[in-house]
Amino acid sequence: MIAQLKTRSVPALERGLAVLELVAKSNGGLTLRELSQALQLPRSSTHCLLVTLERHGYLTRNTRTGRYMFALKLFDLANAALNVTELRDRALPLLRNLMEKTHLTVHMATLEQYEAVLIAKVEPPGLLRLASWIGRRMDVHCTGVGKALIAFLPGEELDYLIREHGLPRHNEKTITSSRRLKEELAKVRRLGYAFDDEEDEIGLRCIGAPVFEQVGKVVASVSVAGTVRQIHPQNRRLIAEQVQQTASRISHELGFGHDD
Image (tube, rainbow, N blue to C red):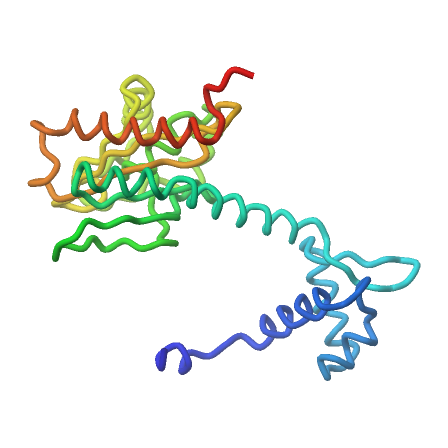
């Protein structure tokens, strides 16, 4: 906490957030003059903040009253946050059950800007702790959760991901060829699960499976991660089945496979 307090804030960002908070507390929005007075800033500075927020879709200005109000971008962000929270809350009992069955660390991730973002983590008791946390962003081409997330992407979207994000090498086992990655993803679709064989970090393995929502789109992935002594050729298939079963049950909770 002390280190956080010592880290400098960004004044312009703080003022922008203050604008959003003031608009949120208002009834029917606020004018430039009202915001300038509330922020104790010159009208020119306040206007620059408002124009920036308007251009990026966070605020909209009523041309008749001159009042600034929330725009659709904020509602999109709020809905996304609520969806992730709901997904995680519905999945947590099943994730805990998977941890108890495998005695391995269980993760759940979603795809954001072509990275896997961890939204849940359930750890088994013991001294071994993996260096992962909720909110951690991970490359998708070398992780079990990531491969499961992108295995069902349309071809042109996958090509865009590879072109824009690249395939960074983490170690000598990392897949860095688009051809090899596509072959690996075809295997994920065939088997129903993804396998990270020390591709992200030497000494660690991960098995992941996709979670589908009602219309058949992948919205998340579930994985278990452990050391090479914990996940090995003798138990890989059993663990993969357990991960797939959990992902399938979460998918069912989201309406996938229901007869309407």
